[in-house]
Length: 284
Figure 1 (tube, rainbow, N blue to C red):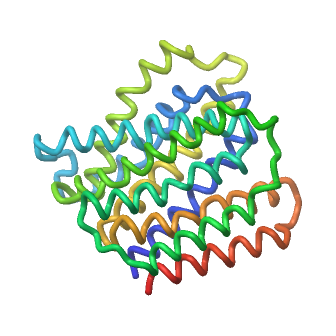
Figure 2 (cartoon, rainbow, N blue to C red):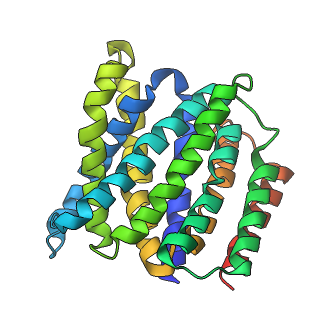
């Protein structure tokens, strides 16, 4: 049950990301933002690393390529594409498309990790994604439906699915905290120079807002959220973990409404009920 508790908390923390990105989309450069989030997440976890009795920076050399692949595809490229999608089509459509990664991750986990195919997990996934659709579609708060935004979201789904499975492979070689820290270091080291080269640094007039948004989402969604996600995969497996993350879009939609001073409507409540039912099915 600790694995399920961990991913439910992670889903709550991740719900900040689309809401904040949607609100401050004009201040954000996707690649630089991704690197900044990794930096702040790393800083937030350093005290935990220092207090840990284990050598959290020690990972087997043969595991480095797999860990790097999991870092670059998921929190790296996947997050950058996801952020760009939110900027182009709004958070509602972006999360609905991106979270089809659940099926990608489950299919790959059966093929590569040998996880058993369970009809209850598949049914739970379908129910959870239906809940996402009920909750967020039709609530478009962003710009017009841009095909590029849909393509970015679909690409993020594919990359997240690959990344999630490689996490399962890497956990056979190292612990959850070590894997989290090394992945964050890899993302920061890779995307910071690339972001500055492609997008340039944030402008002075927007720097304070950019840093505030990056530090908040980095420490919570990336730092604590990523560790809990990896811990959950180690505890209950890929298939069950990814179903529970379907709560994120629903919680995000409710958060957007609350920030705007509105109560979540019947669609959000119905979506939350469907997602919760899907998670319950996946536990059977």
